[in-house]
Amino acid sequence: MNVFAEIFRPGIMDFLIQTGIVLVKAVIVVGVLMLHVTYATYFERKSIGHMQVRLGPMAVGPHGLLQPIADFIKLFFKEDIIPAQADKPIFFVAPVISIFAGMTAISVIPFFNGFVIANINIGLLFVLAMSSLGAYGIIMAGWSSNSKYSFLGGLRSSAQVVSYEIAMGLSLVGVMMMAGSLNLTDIVKAQEQYPLGFFWPQALGFFVFLVAAFAETNRTPFDLPEAESELVAGYFTEYSGMRFALFYVAEYIGMIMMSLIAITCFLGGWNGPFAIPYVPFAWLLIKLYCFIFLFYWVRATVPRYRYDQLMSLGWKILIPLALLNIVVTGLVKVL
Amino acid sequence: MIIALAFGLGSLLVGMLVRPRRPYREKLLPYESGNPPIGEPRVRFSVKFYIIAMLFVVFDVEAIFLYPWAVTFDKIGLYAFVEMVLFIIILLVGYIYAWKKDAFRWDE
Image 1 (cartoon, rainbow over the protein chains, first blue to last red):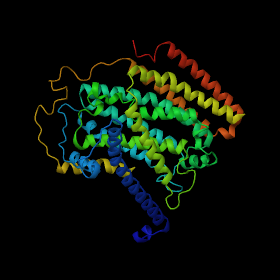
Image 2 (image 1 turned 45 degrees about the vertical axis):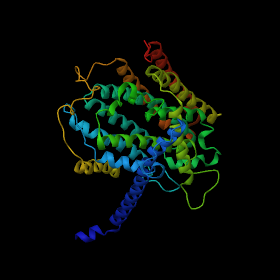
Image 3 (image 1 turned 90 degrees about the horizontal axis):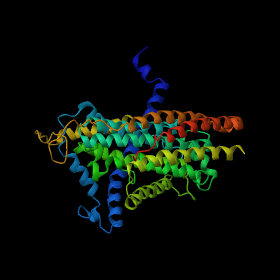
């Protein structure tokens, strides 16, 4: 058979077109995501500045609006220092794994009805798998840097992420029971009959998920892995330049990812109290901005936990609460 | 997935082309507040971390075990619910044992 007939067979063309559409969607989402990450840093500095009666960045551009772009260019041209005793291959791979885990998890989130990069049936399981993959980036960075601060930061962080992973996984079981599916689009559609999404029937699960999400993304009050007053910068102490930037971006992507999962699983996804014409993703964005603001608000308000308090909160309070939530949800559904 | 990987690697590659590279010995030492580093960086650490790792394996497998049950919950009804409550109770016995053995205590 000649080659052209093989290439232009209908099946192959269809496959190519499908792949092309997925690639275009992925590029759009990554572009929008990076824009959000850059301006999330600006928004964080501004809002925390105002909460502490400061102005925040003001110098670059009107009201400091060009600050994140200036930061990015600066980091891009910085020297990339690799410590002489570092474990080089692992040191190289760690930041890439960190950013890869966060970005890949976003590919299963439905942004509005019908727009999702990969509409797979095990969406929620995939998200959990990717968020636990992020722990590898952290522990590899901590180990390979060959520095005491990085090592201790990596240890603390992996123990913390691993502990809260359980609470988070258990808190989502209630959502799966209500929706009867792991596909995130189906989960959003199952919430249409509830006025507040799954927030009201799953209030306990939402609370556990929220606390676990703060701990998983290493945000205050659980930012012990990078407690700057004791560990300098935790697991990425030895990183500089673009590699540091990748960790930084990965942290913000993790934050956005956790907010998106909370919105899709508990707050009704792209649905809102009324439909906004022409902009099907408007409600999702509004909820996302509120959520990100919540992260900053908590950072400006709550002091950091001590490590033993953090561990006992995770193991002694959140896991029993999540189990209780599962049993209560089951009872209500059965009766 | 590929795009995410390409973004991570691509930004590193482009960065490699433009940034300066002037290493010298002090710069390449691990950071220890400006002092020369003392001793081995990979110190022995608390046994608590190992205990947490083992408990994580147990509880995570259990959480994964709950997922298929939760997804098909509508179809399997009361019988499966009672079975799962029994499973959770057995798990709770182990959990209480770990608690009583002070596996979750970090403040001594």
